Length: 284
Image 1 (cartoon, rainbow, N blue to C red):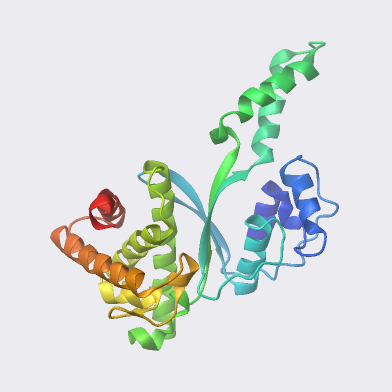
Image 2 (cartoon, one colour):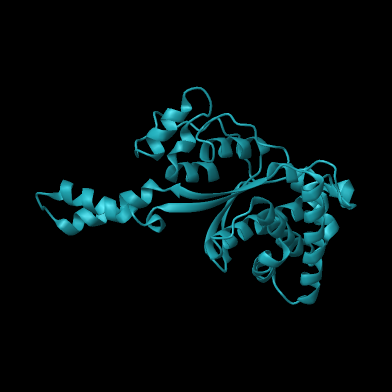
């Protein structure tokens, strides 16, 4: 029922990606129109699907887990890529969507506003003005969604970490949740600090610390596709052109993260996120 619940709020989920779907998406998302139909058969769904809410230093955020990889891909194509059939890398198992328009919030506000007017003759004009005021603040009608898949983190097999598939799947889910929640925290608390690679380094570090109880720089390198100071292929290329200089820089930063984490063993994962973010100008 998770997809059905989400589609009741974000009705673009009723649109099948591909073909002329982008215009249907825009009608629903930008113009607030209703979908042509309410068919969700393009989703497989799973008993592992869930919606939870994570409390963070930057506030509460919705966390959606989809048990089937196919549903994760379909969800991203609709919600992040306007119903276009883009390729989602196998190494990507999570995403944070910021600024998702929630027309249900607008509708609820409209009902309350019109009720407060009574039978006022210029209600249409009044609502037009109120709509502009209400939507001038994105916090009134835009949501942040964290989307997680289930499976090995960064497409790294369990054998690489000497874990069973079951153990690694559970740990991967925890890494993903803390990773994406770290993005949420850093974007809210440090909006002026934006660097795709740095953001991934910090988020991975927090996810690893949360899942394993301590930070391991070699694991951080493994998830990005680095062995020693050499890039062997992995997630790092999703965020930047990779060369020797970047690989060596990333490797050194991850080693520095290890020292910082070791100096503060009592810090919880989100405290570690803030400590690392405060070190950006020094380390990056």
